[in-house]
Length: 128
Image 1: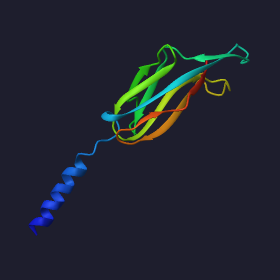
Image 2: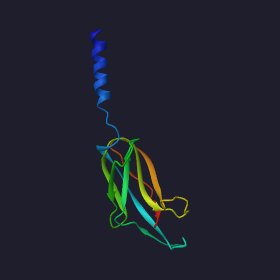
Image 3: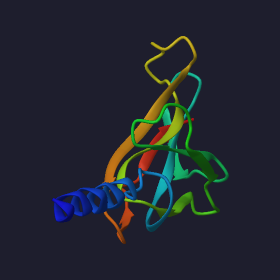
Image 4: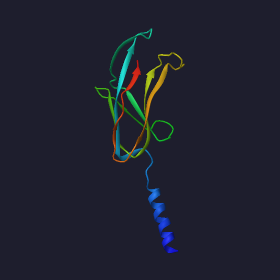
């Protein structure tokens, strides 16, 4: 009887210590944001790295913004020290379809991250 209770308490402690997605772990996510520039009639002009733009991260199914960083001079971003779990990385883009009243769309990528893993996501391309 005592062994069963001790086992259940130990199991509860171990399961209770698992961390949800978010900051504090040993994993990271990085990537790059590329701009596709259009003229006022939405004709393509050029592509280049998106410098000093905000990149956002959501932790798991948590509502709202978990954190944000700015892209560097190469359009690259980096979210270090993450626990394992699901993450959504996103950037706002100009709505070239003109279907969204705000004039913006979300360009996003979802990734499942393991412990001690460093993931480089494919480029996120946005319109400006």
